[in-house]
Length: 271
Image (cartoon, rainbow, N blue to C red; front, side, top):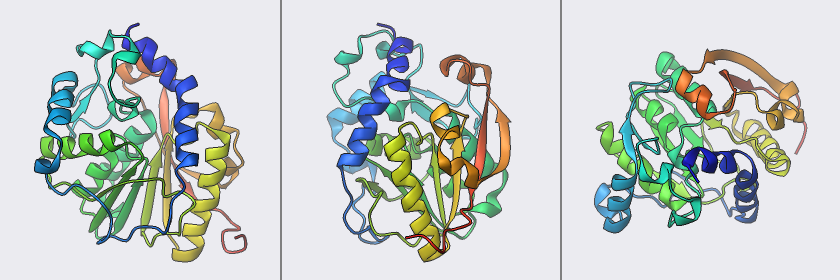
């Protein structure tokens, strides 16, 4: 099965699997900046995993909204674009796709560095790490990338190296439903693909806003699960980007991606 078929599985059925993993990995108390478990240098990467990722991904900065950022992604020139999905030896490589919501967030941050300059930023569900990289490039004082896939964490370090950045802290755990961390800004893209996960995100983000007056930016290309969720009524459109042709083809007809500001009017009233 070609990877475009594999990606179809990721977009549809397998996102349900990932959502179940997010829900099952209940977070304990939120990790603070200095205590978070992360890789600080490429030397700590497993050499076999590093070699596998370097051999089976392509370094690219084309076909997406942020040519300033180089990333290791799965492309049509990669072997696993054509291989059967089950031959991939690790968990589903969601991180190897630069999803439209993340592209929009990264583009917005690069074009508007004031949004992150001198601020602490959490990139939730970071994947390839592009939005965290954009935040570092734009002058954020602290960046924490979060994902539940340890291979994603390793890929983020490789992507930092490609962009001549010191690796930022990366925490590999589900922090949704944990104690609200004290971040100035939380960014998340393409996370609303499951109703129960969306409900958990909605509640946790409200708690972060209520407790720490955290600003929240969400990137999404307008998927049904996102537009039909109750959170939609509490979002304010910041900017909409037309997606490059390559991204449109890979995302089955989606033509644009939007950055939303999450401003729940009742965030000070609900627990």
